[in-house]
Length: 207
Image 1 (cartoon, rainbow, N blue to C red):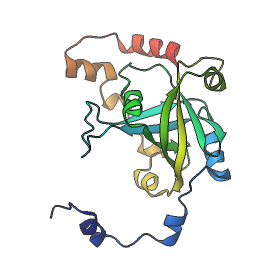
Image 2 (image 1 turned 60 degrees about the horizontal axis):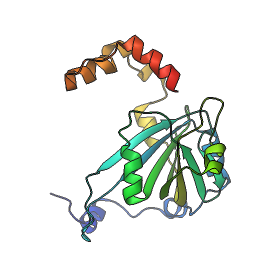
Image 3 (image 1 turned 135 degrees about the vertical axis):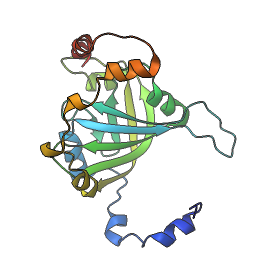
């Protein structure tokens, strides 16, 4: 059966428990802030969707990993986060989506911790000196920051990480069992690139 309505979907699942509903907050409480301060990694989800009102764009959906030292995402207050933009491939999928749709979903992770933190909010791009200075490190002064005004925040349970055993060293693959990034992209595009050694050397200058 094709599930094409919320009513049909809900027939398959029980109603969420009161605790699951109440844990959704409208701002970052003490525990959310402590999590973000310890997190070195966040996935930024964004999208610009064609709707019935006729808003048509060429952008689609995107989920982009962002990393840095723990706490690289800055907390201005209980409603506001700043994510510094770091050098990438210049596709700018996430940044273009934010300009077009003005929303982002964030998934924060802490290595070794199975629980995650989800944050959804209104996203905008800024080059204000104060914001840039707030996100500046010894390594980099960002070109811009993503400002997220929090609408929803909630801690997510550990089940997905327990099932995947993501942090368990015994579940890690031998990296040599997969080709290098350069080999895979070269085969996909037919475009020769630098060697893996050259890539890693370049990456070290862009971290």
